[in-house]
Length: 446
Image (spheres, one colour):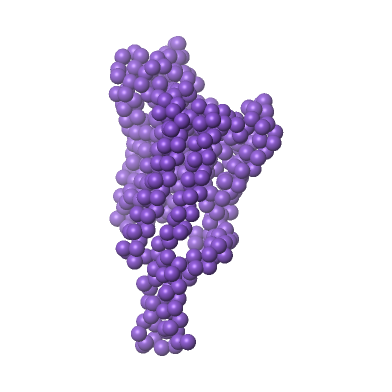
């Protein structure tokens, strides 16, 4: 059979598997003057091989250091298994509901930190900014009798402005992000203490708009059972729409696309996980508003990072500053806006903490708040070296950390043990990240 016939047969097989041919053309090696023929990307034939093809691709990526979320998922399974064997209340509906609620506040801080880490930088001020945000809200509402929702808007705006100020010093003046945000950690914490005054605490009325919405006793759709299932159904529908929309766009552009069977399998797995989670949470009291808002933020920010020009610019700057400049990207603009996003989410996280306690206190945003927020992003898979990671790292990382904290509390372990275990997990995540990057470079994909 001639080379041309083989190519035509290969192209038909690829189309049968639900993909289209790569439009790259080359001339036969033995006759450079011959007419070019279409060449099919070998990776597109994996689907034709079924499970074997996917398994081969999985092994290729693993050997090349492209681990994705695999380590943290395995780690989470191990953690849940150990704690469940030690205490059968760990996987109870009430305990899982508590994990979902309490991880949301730290998770909000972690979402903002993902943006900064994608640049290969760090923001040490998010803990202090979150504490200042809860204090500002309390001052606005209690001392100045401001409308709670207006106070919320001004509080988040202030957090974003603080982050933009950090970004300006970093991008325009050239002060290292570590130094400017360390100064922010100290300075904004001092401002919080000054605003709280000698009393050290400002109690916020529990019926004050956002505080009431974010309280532990507040559930989506007022504890109605339909609430959790409605969220699960919405997640499935959005996944279907997004996947088929992407398939349609890629078909129109003449590039490889996922076959319908694969999309249905993926969405089916999502449906199983979503509705099982909804059933478990309904066995407790339902889905807390805090968790709903956290998940909604993840979906929106994931779209921004993966589907918008701005998101691609963030990854480009994190991957290489000089290359980003040559591509026409305004590096200072990206840096400033990324730190503004970090500050804004820190302020939102501060409101989540205020919702938990209905107060602003001296301890707000201090202690291990900063470390846990950073650890969540890194443990979840966002690289400390920049250019690699997803916003879902905030969810996976906080699931690991909050699971450890809750599990050790059930076993009446000392806080010191929690810190040591969490530190060990963080170190393991960074080691995996470093080894993964080295493997990718060795494989020519770093």
